[in-house]
Image (tube, rainbow, N blue to C red):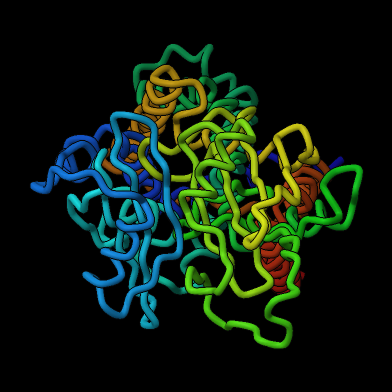
Length: 446
């Protein structure tokens, strides 16, 4: 009976570890850097977040918006973030070249300072973590593939630890290997959770899950067009970012449609102060963001999100809400709360802040940090184990046994491949190569 299970797992574990370790180190270290972005930004941008302008006179938010448009010629206002004290409110402006800046307003709605959005610590670390500071789709595929293979390393490592009875072996020669194995076992569940909650960012699997949710009402919401979240999207909750927005009653401007992404220049449009007041009247408490209508038929979007990626703007998943106000009458047209999400929407709404480390406060950050440190230690112990073998002249990779893979290996890889399609595609390529090598060697032996 063919029992060629251990050898394929060992070889795949060994070579995969060497292949993805550089990216695993990068993702882990950048993840630690992003984990504490609120604390870092509170120190880096103390003046912008909490400071006061030299002007002491109070002005309305509308007047502040006009001042911003005059001061930053060529930029238009696309979003206003109404923050909780002690944070200053934030106005997002952008131009036709795709450049974006944050303008901070003090308690008197006077301009305090500005920051280039791409260069902020949080946005820099997010881009570094998700796409290695590039815009190339290939890199995002590579990052996702690395995360998938990390799960395989956990599965195969767990199998080999018990198969070899490594924990019962008292040989000092296997000290580093045993530490590597123990750390792997301890990390198995928390590391899988961290990887799985990072799926919403993935370019391949994330989009497939999102589409599945949109196509199956029992899992998602048919009225939502799900997309995976990106490190540069606005602060609308993930589950409603791509929702078809309801249209305002549009009797005044029939036939005239603006093509701008957001506009506050439409005749008859409610002022931002009125939208702020309407939000309060509808029990939408700070912090929240206001996104201007995209055109003359658009609506004001007021939202609270648990995964904004903005210091001071995140709320509990249960507090998430997205409200749409008619831009002419101010009427609340529709409101979507956490309870209205499908199971996948709720999973992402919980999973993203858990992954980022702010779902349940400081304890979440500490737990994520400990997992990351332990993971780095496991990688180090694995490398040290190999180095020790190299000194004794046994550092060659696992030899290939020219036998077909066992049913257990095939089934395990197939299940993981179905759950992680990108991983499945890579394994299929490996399986084809292995099959070719097997028959070539068998032919030579005949």
